[in-house]
Image 1 (tube, rainbow, N blue to C red):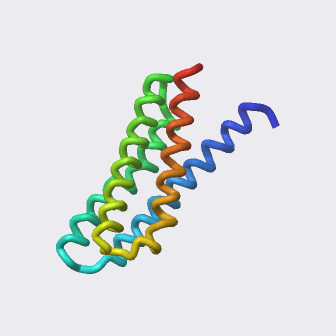
Image 2: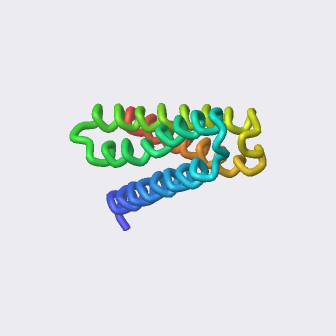
Image 3: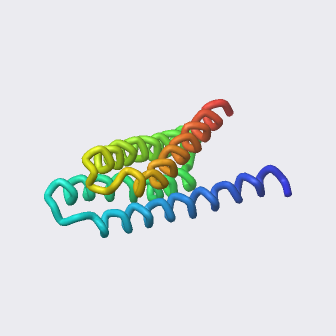
Length: 124
């Protein structure tokens, strides 16, 4: 397979991965307690966590390198915000930290992927 085919596969994988991430966030929020704190934090992480995939979709359709980098930066910003809200949900024991650990780990893995992608795009 040529380099272009590999890049295309990576785009599909990341598109699917960010959608699955959004679905995990949705499932988390739907199971949160009905307390005011849980609902406020849930709405925040729902907004930021689900927007990653939408922003990535826009990035993958960018018309220029600058637009691609900007949209990937938006993805990274939303992932950072999601990490913050998930940390608060964990720190306040709205959800036991052990239950949130896999989602936080996935968030951090996605952050690393987006940082690398942005660095690569800037280097071209």
